[in-house]
Length: 298
Image 1 (tube, one colour):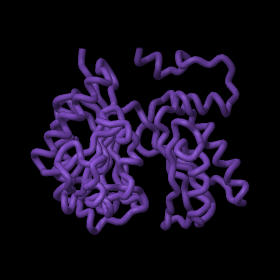
Image 2 (image 1 turned 60 degrees about the vertical axis):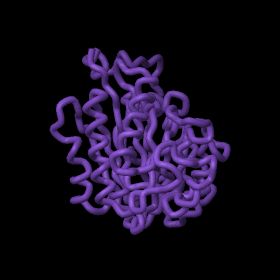
Image 3 (image 1 turned 90 degrees about the horizontal axis):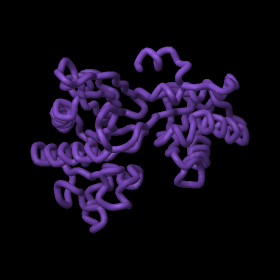
């Protein structure tokens, strides 16, 4: 039976469509690889790509794209709202079908080793692939961002897993690892005050006392004149989207602001939205077996 792995590489370019096209090109028309989605954001200055494939062809396509990103993106000139430390900022592998987490971890290590040898790109292994507990959390790995990373990697605790105590002069450093499916979920507020978004993000994220499987920061959307609470939901089965959404609405009221919308970046499991729909509709005794598409896929 075919083994299927998902990969969601994040590249630090969201403003130049030509550069984005060149980076994404290795994922098009490749046997054993399917490009599912990619989306760019000018405020974040970031592109998130979602693809699936068999381990070997997926690995080769990702390595090629990382090489192009290394050539195309100069982090010394990069500006954007989203935290970042490299041209290819993060590359997670997610087991989907007939693949174990251990196999996904091994795949991540093969990619990390290959890109370091081929492009002289230093790599941190993170999440399930991390070589130490303090390297599991991406936020901790990326703390300091590109501007402080050259100094950070000199510390004993933060020497890259591949590449020695240095960063690439223009492409920075990349985090590669294996993890469970993640939902990138953003909630927009009708204010341009970033302090409100930062405070609400602090109240909902796990790191500062919020939901266990929620990471969050405040982001300015300058082109729209509003701010957003930008989140990664690392396990939607244990912290549902609707719970976080409702708490953000409650927290926003204390500052006299309102939620004006939300967005999903990239793809997400159908169950994450079904769970939220069931909550808001008050559906009783619902089962995923009642979803037409689910039954068709069985």
